[in-house]
Each structure stands twice: as structure tokens, then as C-alpha cells.
Length: 94
Image: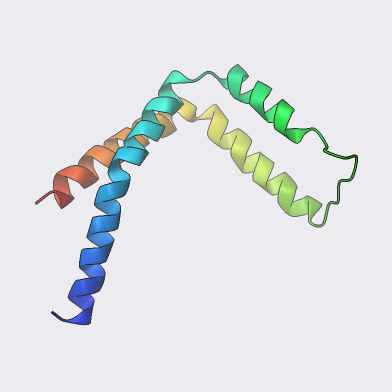
């Protein structure tokens, strides 16, 4: 078996095994509410030990901007995840 065929077979196997995970993530995005996520985020942002070092504050701001953009489009993103998982599973199961 050529190396390219082995690589594609490994990619197919990996994608096939991740389809259920993407599907479950899509369902979780559809079922969860934004306020629950905000509460978890507030608990995780607390400083531990009083020491906090910011190395790249500009990058961190951009990450939060993208995260907020995704949260606003949570319903659409959940539907995209579910459709992607179903389509990928239908194509790769053969």
C-alpha cells in the first residue's frame, strides 16, 4: 500500500471517530444557554494566588472578541456542527 493511501486511510479513520464528538458538541451548543457559560467563565477567570502575568494582552483581547462573536451565533454554529458531522459520517462510512 502506498504511503499516500496510508495517510488518507488514517485521516479517514480519525475523521470518522471525531464525527460523534462534533455531533455532541453541536447538540450541546443548541441546548446550553449563554448565561450558564458566562457563570462558568466568571469562576474560571478568578486569579489564583494573586499572581497574574499578561504577556500578550492584545492577542488575549482578540481571542475574547472571537469568542464573543461565536457566542452570539451559537445557534447557527450548533446547526453547522450537526450538519457537518452527519454529512461527514455519511460520506466516510463506506
